[in-house]
Every structure is written in C-alpha cells, then in structure tokens.
Image (cartoon, rainbow over all chains, first blue to last red; front, side, top):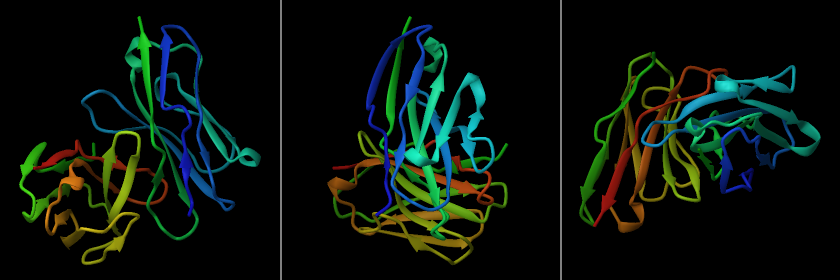
Length: 114
Length: 112
C-alpha cells in the first residue's frame, strides 16, 4: 500500500535556527503534495502545495518545500524559525490512483524555544 | 472563507452506544472526508464521499459507517462504540483536486 513517512517525530529548535522536516512517499506514479500545519488548539491549515512545474514551492509564513522526484521526497524548510512556529506539521500526498483522498504522514511536532 | 463545522467539540460516550458525529460545510463542496487523528499515527482516512448518497471506504472503515443525504452534511456513525475508538475525529471538505482540504475543528471523542 502507498504510504507517507515523516521520520522526524519531535524536533526542538531555538529561535532563528533553520528548519528542515522530511517527508517521503512510496508511490511511483504522479503525485500532488501538501504540507499542513496544526497550531495548538487550532484546526489544520494548508501551508503549501505542489502540483506541477517548479519543484520549489513557497507557502505562507516563509515556509517552502522542494519536490525531488528521484528521491520521492517533499521536505519542508524555513530559514529562520520563530516561537510562533511551534506546531505539528503534516505531509500529505494525493496519488493518481483515482482516489481523491489525501494520505497523511504521522506528523512532526516542532517545538521552538525562545 | 469556507467553513467546516463539526457539531461537538468534546463527546463522552459509553461502550456499546451508537454515536453520531455531524459535519456541515457551507461552500457547496462535492468532496467530504472523515479522518481520525491519533498521536504518532497522524491522520487516517475512515470514509469519504464524492457526492450525495455516495460513499467510499478509506483505510480504517471497520466499526464505522457514514451518511450523506444532503451535499453539505456528512455524518460519521459509530455503530457500537468501543474504547479503541477514543480519538480526535476530523472532518474535511474540498471542491476539487487542486485546492487541498478545509478542515473542521475536530471532535474529541472519549469512549468509557
């Protein structure tokens, strides 16, 4: 079965540090890729998405992600994190199998210390 | 803004009860989804629907059913609640493949 892996379960950073969260998927066909964020006590929100074209996509709040097809990866990055980035981050993939639903990774909890 | 509203934020039910979780969206979206969110497991798809009266099983449908009698409403039903169904339940909707999901705030269900 197709799957999405987020290997970093809990990341602790100091403010101004750089962030990279890994996301890998196991599917050889065409994919649409998403990153969602869930701030404490809030609902999930879309950070960014990739459908086609430039593999480097920019999202809200200074986040970006790079799609590397050969590595089946879609890692999330931010050059300098802030305390307000403390949240849980989920990678999600839609595969061209005909199913319209997203498959989510297990999530990465980011804690930014002031 | 699209709103996805889940009727209850917190629910406590007894083992064996039949439980209804309601979800309503206000932007005429065709697609609606139910996920459960558990620590360390992320979001797992229970059921989804592309249209009224249409439903498809997700990855973990056992012990659940759904109903979509109207386009804006998608209900999740726990036929006989069990303690292993204690979880956060998230409803989402989408218009098409391009625009990702809009999520509700979730219902935290505890089965005792």
